[in-house]
Amino acid sequence: MAIKKGPTKGSGGKHRNALRGRGATPKAEDRVYHKAYRAKKIADRRKMADPRLAARRRAAKFTSDSDDLVIGRNAVLEALRVGVPSSQLYIAARIEHDDRTREIVKLASANGLSLMEADRLEMDRIAHSSNHQGVVLKVQPFEYSSLAELADRAEKKARAMEAANSAAARINARPLFIALDGVTDPQNLGAVIRSAAAFGANGVILPERRSASVTAAAWKVSAGAAAHMPVARVVNLNKAIDGLKERGYYVVGLDGGGDALVGETGFETDPLVVVLGSEGSGLSRLVREACDSIAGIPISNMVESLNASVAAGISLYAVARARREAAAAQA
Image (cartoon, rainbow, N blue to C red; front, top):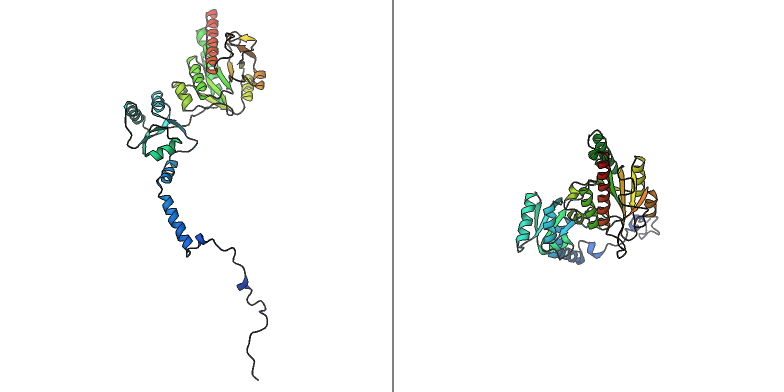
């Protein structure tokens, strides 16, 4: 019997795999056979060849937004003269040299810095500005010390000097720190570091937040004293002060409404921490409460307050004078 040929009724699932979905249709620019793909490749090559974008890519290899940069001929020259730790010097290609740039290159070479030549677009990108005068110096990050290390070192020195025959040597060797509460100007910080070095302090204490850092600007104002004066950063200044008090330190805060004058608190010959507040708000409440005494500097009524760095210099001088007088009385 002949079998009638023809389509069977229903697939019975025989073509189910062929009907399965394959996902979203790729974009035209992602299909290698499409003209949009070729147009995208041409646009990418043109973009890579753009000199402005190429300059940005090259500059990004050497610098970032977090780098500490010194910009301009005068600023770079001053930084190199005082010995700011640096890693690289960028010089614009075809720069018109003068006495400053010649000395800059000479100092950079003497200090073993890497000299990088860059075109104008690259220099603009590195400096994040077009006002760089063709010279940019990349500064190394400052190395902070821990407060425990500074206190251990100061106390070890004081114990060693207790056997000295000189009363002045014994008293002057007693630990002295200056702490800054809310001082945000790096130039003020640099001046404080310079004063601390001048009057024999053992270190400067900074909080990590709401405080200036030892940047190139602070280093320059310190006139190189930052290379010799250790600086500690603490998470919580109030807790750091409490920790030093447990080690036998006394704390004197500087404020206009103090109950004593600087140098006359009675704690000058003891292990001492002098705390300086900001010009605007002064000492914070918790830090003020942690102080053993609040001292003021007598000034004219015509002036509301002193610059923070000036106040630091006066207070450190007052401590040094009080220690000299105490040593003379024991002699």
